[in-house]
Amino acid sequence: MDIVRLSSPKPLILNGQKIAADIVAEVRNSVEHEGITPGLAVVLVGSDPASAVYVRNKSTRARECGFLSRQIDLSADVSEAELLRIIAELNADPVVHGVLVQLPLPRHIDAKRVIESIDPVKDVDGFHYANAGRLSTGAIETALVPCTPLGVMRLIKEAIGPDLSGKHAVVVGRSNIVGKPLAQLLINANCTVSIVHSRTAEPEALTRQADILIAAVGVPKLVNASWVKKGAVVIDVGINRELDAAGKATLVGDVDYGQVSPLTSAITPVPGGVGPMTIAMLLQNTLLAARRAQQGAKA
Ligand code: NAD
Image (cartoon, rainbow, N blue to C red; front, side, top):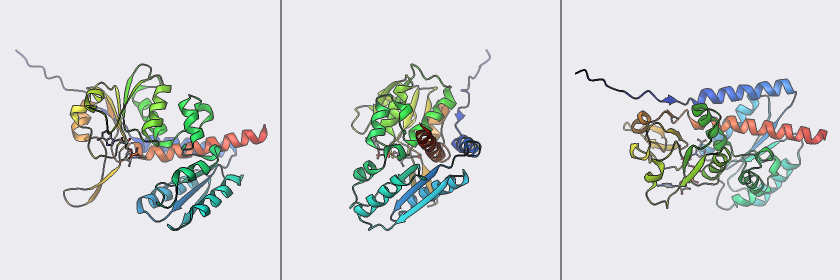
């Protein structure tokens, strides 16, 4: 008797680098053709090396797209009052359409108060209560939506197509920056959504039901093969810095890629998956804020 070996088809590796480059090119093209100059101001407090890299990348990409890009570097001991004064100036500046304060902030500054001081129409990170409220009530067309969840949605649609109706999506993590807004976007896309977090009993029992599984936790390789249903789409938001066997610094996701990828229909790598999408979506949000400002000025 012949033995027929059925091997699983290879998963689609979702190339965030390439998809993000396409989005950036679209944004640049819109700027050229619409005769609009979006303005993005990025505020960095202190000299945390990772934050400095993120901020530099955001400012550079914005310039490459023809934006007016302003980077404001403040020392770690800047007072909250001074930071709020600078934000008020940016809120009032008509050439600035997006204001972003890089998190985390030093302990002596109340991050919530700072975020709430940004004009919601310029809140291109989408963290202001007004934008969170619009997203959670389904008024997405008037909101600015957080960039990483927007990028994740784009990657999911790349894998599945535009219609996510009826899919069971399980989000691991409930932060205000990723987990919660992502769950709202998935509900809005007619998915059935479960949220798993640090207090969930038996998380694997839920994640094994997921057609779409997103990990946004910050625990290296938490999601292993026993968490995943065969054929699932797996999106790894985690960015964890670790030393490899040779003592070299390396980036690791929240998903054990080696174990999990053979089970999936599509998966994001780390690095090169969700990470590049976040900046692309920030540029898209800033263009959107600039278009709304232009329309508002005409109205
Ligand atoms: P966070 O620390 O604010 O939230 C982590 C969440 O994970 C919490 O809601 C917590 O309940 C949950 N959690 C913790 N341990 C858990 C466990 N054992 N099982 C289930 N849930 C658990 O983190 P965040 O800001 O949402 O970021 C999550 C990860 O995503 C981090 O690695 C971060 O670096 C990364 N991140 C990446 C991007 C990007 O652009 N790719 C953007 C933002 C965050």
